[in-house]
Each structure stands twice: as C-alpha cells, then as structure tokens.
Amino acid sequence: MTDTEEITDEVVAQSEESIEALNPIDESPATVPFDPAYDSRRQRIYDHRVEAQAEPNTMIACLAGVNSDLFDTELIVAETLRQGLAASGGSLETIERYGPLIELTLRLSKQITQVTQLEQRARKDNGEGTSSKPR
Image (tube, rainbow, N blue to C red; front, side, top):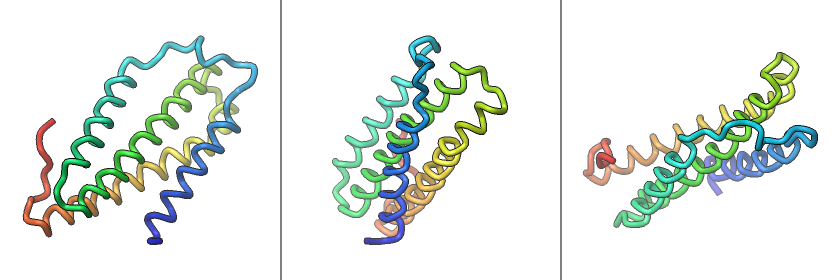
C-alpha cells in the first residue's frame, strides 16, 4: 500500500469518526438552510466518477476514481461543518469544537490536490496533456 493510499484510508476513517463525534445531539441540522450548491457539486463529482471509469488508461482511471471519492468525502465533511457552524452561531467556542472537522477538511483538500497532481502527471506521461475536458 502506498503512502497516498494509507493517508487516504486514514482520512476517510477520521472523517466518519469526526462527523459522528461532532454531530450535535441538541442541535437539529434541519433548522439550517440547505446549501443549494450541494446537489450540483454532488452531481459534478458523480460526473467526474463516470468519466474516470471511461478512461482507457487504468492508472488515470484509478487516480480519477480515488479523487472523486475524496471529493465526495470532502463534500460531506464540509456540509456537516457548514451546518454545524451555522446552527450554533459560529462563536469561538463552536469553532474550537469543530476544530477537528476543520482540520479534516484541510487534510482532504491537500489529498485532493496531491491526487490531482498525480492524475495530471499521468495524463501528461500518457500524451494527453494536463488539461481535462471542459465540463
């Protein structure tokens, strides 16, 4: 298992633990307005996942698949964070309480960046260039 795979597995496991640990029992996320961009982001991630599976180069397809999974996890974590901060007013105490989730969001973003760079490098080595198809 590579370092990236180990870190990715660790990040996903921590995201599940952090979401469960930070889910406020006395605060209902339903009272916070739902982010309308959430559904469109989820669709874009799904589209990326589908495109990845159509990629003929196995390495590029796998990297794009891993990246879409990371994007999906980041979206869930970020929405949980947004809902929690909005529901509790965003005080300093609340921000400190959600510190682990903020840290997890940053780690996921770093992982997404690293996997994207690997994917772009694989595309370049495969003669595809570094830009992806317009969406």
